[in-house]
Each structure stands twice: as structure tokens, then as C-alpha cells.
Length: 244
Image (cartoon, rainbow, N blue to C red; front, side, top):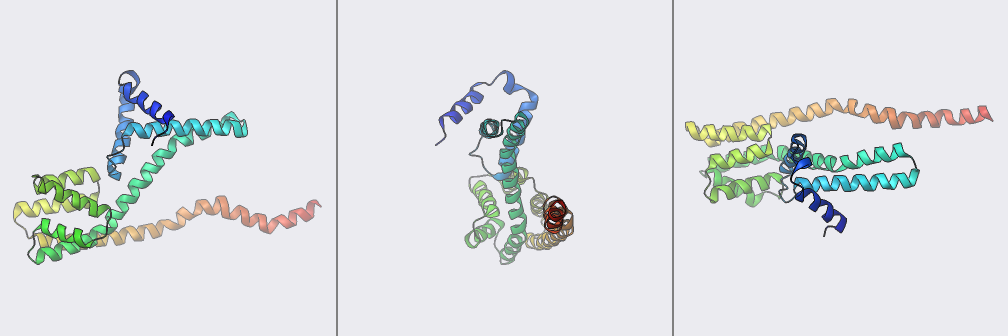
């Protein structure tokens, strides 16, 4: 259950639909939060709730550090960092979910191509994948596509709506290739097989790129944390003997 201060803060933003909340920059900001929530597939959370958490955490962090350190500058820094924590959480959750989808997609396409070669339709192949695959983001997306087609939506609309929500290049390629294969009568099994190979190559390239970027990413913690401690251990006793 939400606390009373949070409920009061949330009610304030929901009831004030004029003035401040109608400014364009504020609408764009709420749109950015809404996009991150869509990437997370968290339609149960509203953007104004994230905004409420930002303000609540900022105020608590600012008040805590002003009493702890009695320093206004540190309190302001804590206030700003507190506002950024919910956004960092959104970005990390959305990025993690997308990485899982990209990692699972090549294997899923191989399974779909095998089922299609066995004579199953795309929907039946997805159903077989859902029965045997572990729960995960891609599992949820395929389940959503099947639910849309079973409720009367066309395959094209179901694929395009999911692709637009995810906004992933690999999934967009998957959607576009299937739509073109259906339109021009190309074999879906052959298309899926070629797509799985393409996705596998892109996955390998992303892994190689991550390995190449690792030394650069390690440079900052090396300079900030490891090297000062190393110099302190090596030259600390010498400096103590010198001053003594």
C-alpha cells in the first residue's frame, strides 16, 4: 500500500491538469517516462507516479543530508541525485529487458523456422515455442502477439504494434521480414532461417564490440579507485617514516 504522503503528492499532480502540467516541456518529459515504461512493458505504472517518486526521494534525500552534514551544497547535490534515481531505475530495467529479448531472439527464430518447416503456421509455431520456452520478455511478447491474433487482429497489425512498442532494430527486422514474406508469398520457414543466422551474426558482433570496449570502461574505475589505493599502500609507509 502507498504511504499517505505519496498518495497526497500523487493526487496533487493528477488533479492539477492545467497550468504547470500543460506546459509542452512537461508533457515531453512525461512522454519520455511513458516511453521507458513501454520499453519495460509496465503499463500498470503511470508516468505521474514516477514523477511523484522523484519528488519524494529528492525531498527525503535533501532533508536527510542537510541534517546529517549541515551543508547546503551537499544537500542540493543529494536533492538532484534523488530525482535521478527513478530515471536510472527505469533506464536500467528497460535496457535489461531489451538485452534479454535480443539474446533470446536468435534461438526463438530457429525454433520457429523448424516448426514452420514441419508444416505449422506462424501462430502454431509461436504456440509451440511458448509451451517449451522459459518465461521471459520474449515469451511475453510472443504471447501478446498470439493474444492479439486470437482476439481478431490481423497478424500484420499484431506484429507492427509490438514492434512499434519495443522499438528494437532486430525485432523490427523480424516483423518487416515476416510481413514481406506474407505479402510476396515467400516461404516463411526460409525467411525465419535466414533471420536466425543474421541475428546470430549480429549477436556475435555485439559481443565482440563489448569486449573491445571493456578496457576503456575499466579505465575510469582504475584511475579513481584502484590506482590511489595502490599508491597509498606503496608510498604510505614511506611517507609516514619521512614525516616521523
